[in-house]
Image (tube, rainbow, N blue to C red; front, side, top):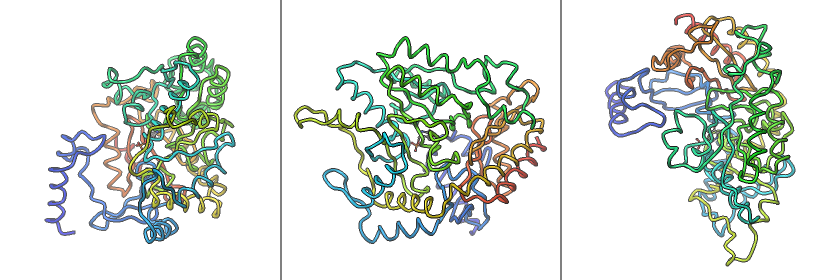
Length: 467
Ligand code: PLP
């Protein structure tokens, strides 16, 4: 692209747009990178306006599932455009939404029987919180507190921020929020109760322990047990990101934690909301993360990958027990008074139907194992690096925690933006990934090739050597 046009576009962006999760003073100063203007995409790659290609290592914020410009999804959306692009879902319905609900209910745990549509991950969780709260009112129980985890991220609406446990994002809003209890995050690498069984520092030999079995005394789960025992009559629901607290830096839960958490909820009569907005649709190697530990929640929240990264769409699936509690005469006002303008958008539903069809027909999850093994092998090769403190990996998701001192695990001072600068430098290698604090995050497409994965890891190695 002509430099003058490019400069004009960049200036226009800087003058007119406020970007999410971005310190705009840095953006205006090209710190740590210059705004990159994306023009098109294909498969694993994004192309800027000069035609330079970049390997998309974060699935464009964890949404593109089967690569960009996927022919099957392109076709499904084009076909739907020729019929109807949008209609209200109040008093009307349509085939793409009906088909999608049938397909989802076939692959979800069999206690989940009803699909409620919304638009994004935050609203999927918000819906579950509101349904749980209202359900207890119908049972004549006053339960208004939610149980969540430190380091939890469930979205940016006020409801989801109320159950958010990332202090950097959420503590500023505390006085605006409803009450939640937070138990410690199962973040083994930085666990204050860490015992010698959990090996430290990270080395190839210790890799398995860092993707851990619960081989400690499980203080993180004991906290859940004691809060539930004391407060079970006050708690409306517990909300958890199964297996991976992704947005706080790919904090992979030790094996057994999720099952134990779900069992405790059941024992104490607490509704369980599993937020699979990030982990759903194969990202963990199985269709849903809950399948790894055979958990059956009362609600599951889905979004991001559901449309293969094409359109905003979300789902809150729940049981007949919850749904039936809302039934009654109109004048009883038990209706779930919640909905959005774009609820169940037909184009988005058509995209999601295409994604589910392709996952099934092309046996994509069955073929994924060799890719996740390859990623694991590549990550293991990074472990010896003296700037790598810990690596957490599950399916096609990984977090590489960068430290200043490997022996003590001392992190880089976040103000120095050291880890953000690694991501900026990776653009010179034609790679787009993002950091979450001191953790480099990989969130690969299910279609990313082994060669592409190796390319990302080699480039990271080079940039770590340059630190
Ligand atoms: N829940 C989880 C687990 C997430 O990772 C995210 C986003 O990263 C959300 C909810 C919020 O989704 P959205 O950004 O689509 O509102």
